Amino acid sequence: MDMIKTTIDGREIEVQRDRWALEVAREMGIEIPTLCHHSALEPYGACRLCVVEVTKGKWTWLTTSCDLPIREGLTIRTDTPAVIAARKTALELMLAQAPDAEEVRQLAEQLGTKSPRFPDRNESNACILCGLCVRVCKVVTGKMAICFSNRGTDRKVGPPFDRSSDECIGCNACVDICPTGCIESRDEAGIRKIPMLKTELKLADCEVCGKPFAPIRQLEHMQAKLREKFGDDFEAGCICPVCRREQTAARLHNVAEKIG
Image (cartoon, helix red, strand yellow):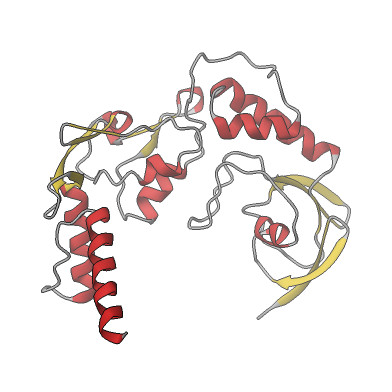
């Protein structure tokens, strides 16, 4: 393990080379805001909120800490006037883009950013192009049902070619990870609808209670993955989480009675 020395907010530490600065700083108890970072995904540096000031030799610059690899001799500051100003500017842009997004508003309040200098785009929980949904779809589910398109001010997130994609399994991973709530999902009359992705998928009925609970395409995807791992004869069954928990609890109760 290649250990090196670096300094963060005046504290010299020894740390493994090439670890991400954001990760190391948080382990030291230093709070750095971010809206595009998730521990299950590779750093992306889109939101610019985790910016820090880095000095090496006679050079000083601002950069995002989520994708900054720790190297020997770096001096990193997380709270300089330049850092705070950069974070406030990034938040002002996000407030103009997504004024009603709870996470954006909370961060703005923490940094004292109240009224953005930029014009409101008149959208409630708009996309801030953090890329979390695109990455979670590709990395976690192994799909590419959502992507970036266009450039500049026309850049947006949506299904490829702006059409309903056969890649979408309706798992709601993108919905759960979105920090602004701009990706919505609802189950109606046995159909899961994700308007932003133009997705409408039939839900499977639970074999026990009969209630629709998950898209058939999602269950087929999960079944295929489980068979890859456990063999072609593996059968998970079409049972909703509530009934599965009740079955597990009943089995554990029976085991406990036999032991006791």
